[in-house]
Length: 313
Ligand code: UDP
Ligand code: MG
Image (cartoon, rainbow, N blue to C red; front, side):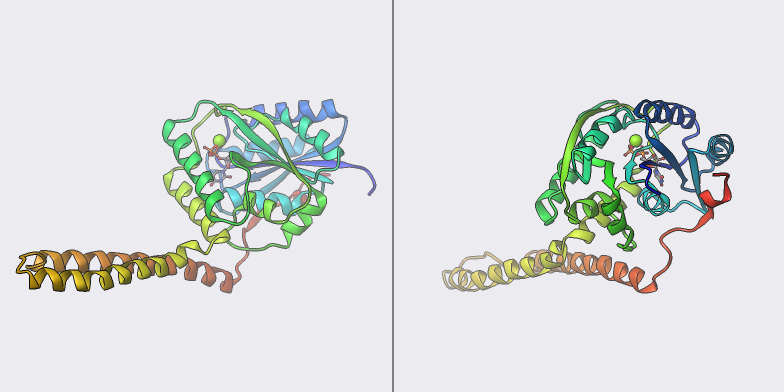
């Protein structure tokens, strides 16, 4: 195969209202580029009828490649499946809710032709999202930037173009808990960004409730940083240091007849504080050990019910 193909990957979890519009906008954009293209719609266990819509698109248009999961595996795994099934020389990951305007793909392709292997999209503005989402998102990106070695450009999401070389590397990284935007920086290559304004969701509600956001943040941090594990050591040194300093202070105060540090309240506070620190440290250990356990089991990352091979080419 010498022909250039561009793959677009869109993870779908209950997006029936936006699917027709997504299909229309992506196909308009791709037709305008004159390239060969495919749109991989990864159905991540939808229950609202999105699955049937995807199946119907695929019957009618050979550009549409469906990958239908056996259940909900989560956004990052849906994108991973997309990377596995994509055949393109360049692969674009896009959210299905049209918060990432497909028109930006044209700018990405331009950079790709200039020789960049990763072209991420930087959100210069975000519309139609709650202050809570904006605040937690901005905090999250800044923490990740501080505590990890991979310098993920601030305010970028998964909306990005990856060259075939990068996709092939990512396909070999089979870690269970995935933070793709970190992984795609970690691999290196020539990277650049294009700016865009993030729109509001086209329809429906966010599919990232707080619980999923929290899991996403934990996966991101544990995949790229040991800092939480080392925190116990730092806190240990701090409290041991304080204890050593406290010894002469208590002795001198007692000698001078002071009533300070009498009574159980002081002891209770010290015990509860240290107990809390120890439990938190244990919990952090648990997070990492649980992840090791998941890796040891070596289960498949996702399970597919229907793949593009089940549809006309
Ligand atoms: N998504 C998914 N599986 C999930 C949750 C979300 O495939 O378990 C998809 C969703 O359909 C959308 C993308 O991931 O295409 C981003 O989700 P969403 O727009 O709800 O997140 P937000 O933009 O609010 O962060
Ligand atoms: Mg969204």
